[in-house]
Length: 257
Ligand SMILES: CSCCC(=O)C(=O)COP(=O)(O)O
Ligand SMILES: [Mg+2]
Image (cartoon, rainbow, N blue to C red; front, side, top):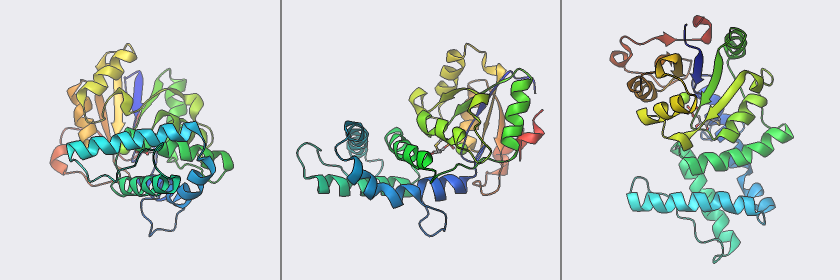
């Protein structure tokens, strides 16, 4: 692999989808793993209710809900004005809004920022520890000792990405990571986002290898001129074999030199 820069997705690539959805997000209430956000949101809102920081996150969720209503994209739960509504009404709306967005597995900035804000406490208390595949720390070490640089590009907020790699079940992997990108640089299925990442790294697109489980992200990165590898891990969504034709497909980072 001759690319000096490696840009890596998280869910389905470094980390099992089941961990993110069942443990970290709690999207599947039927499964045994601890659905952290859903289990803790009520208590979290009660404890932090006076915090201006929490109000900022709620304002973003509220604004996103308004935009969703205008666009008609999803039937978002509307959050009433914090200053003009009883706290209990706002709290219930926030819980329903977050719950519904997680059920839909939305990769939207306001939701991801709120989740990251809650996970911060979970990691700090030791209730949460993230899961990364065994081959990930091995590859991060191999690449960085060979002079390559590792970057992350995920729908998860940058704050949440840093927590995930700091508090991983394979130890603190942050020292191997040179930088992070989330959707504030642009959506992951847009070629312009990969162009913007290339520019911010002052790198030619062909110097960057992007690894992801999502074929739409892979296709967008290719349109921007990046090299790509499709991550096929247990539990990932199946990909139409026709769309994999001519692509590098990996089941583990071990197959990348
Ligand atoms: C880093 S936070 C946990 C992951 C997450 O919330 C997420 O949506 C990951 O999506 P990705 O773009 O990494 O597939
Ligand atoms: Mg992914």
